[in-house]
Length: 111
Image (cartoon, rainbow, N blue to C red; front, side, top):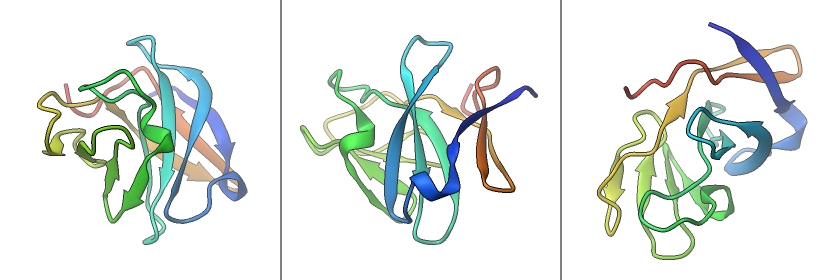
């Protein structure tokens, strides 16, 4: 695995997400998500239903909701959990080292 620094832990409060400057293999920016349970996830920052940033949506539990049409995605699998989206969104391995959140864009967890 090849991890790259995406952001600092202080940049993403619990229950929120942050669009990063990293580009995924699909050419889409990545959203780093910090849940209220102190879990960290990385997901392509584009809804599979409409080309809008998921990082602008609401985080609830292990899901993120697209702000435009309400599609919901499981942050652990990338699979849609609520319509209108039917296609999954790529997700990536995340690790926290010290104050840094690192993402491995060379590996998708839902291939």
